[in-house]
Amino acid sequence: MFIKLDSSRKEISINVWEAIDLANKHPRVNILNPGPGVGGHCISVDPWFIVEVSKNAKLIRSARELNDSMPYYVCNLLCRELERRGIENPKVAIFGVAYKGDVEDTRESPGKKIIEYLLSRGINVSVYDPYVKTFEYPLESLKEAVKDADAILVVTDHRDFKNFKEEEIREIYRLMRNRIVIDTRNILERDLWKKIGFYVKLLGDGRVIY
Image (tube, rainbow, N blue to C red; front, side, top):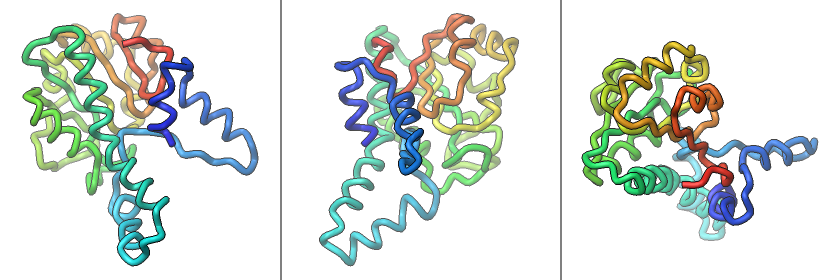
């Protein structure tokens, strides 16, 4: 549903998060929030067992295929922004590779697919996750990850990312080469980041023009 909404958001100028929030005010509605993909060892895997034994499970198959496509959808949004600005040899700092906020579990994380896709496009990638101790790709400190980066891609909704202090954000600004931020989880204090000078794009907000 999110991809369908997001593909129309610029035409009708809506914020998908606000639309979902309004819909969820109805007592019998509970639409889940969008993001860069679904991870974890259960939700991202178990539906395929149903599809395997039932050819009639078309809705489940479609839902999984849509969710599995989200990491590439997000990467293409980011790549378009980098190309629009003519940034050569770009570096992207990935914020979060755990499959959900405030955990260290990276099983089936969309972050891994995002990193692999960006690397295949010739984009330099650094990874920062304050919760994860081991990962398939090198983990860096916050300062190392953002140094000379052109963009930050927020993949996981860790509370640490929401709770950045203003002086920390200003330090990130000083360290980066370009200041693009794409928040796929609606976790950042976007007004504060914008005030400091970042271009901040919320996944699903049609009111932000590329």
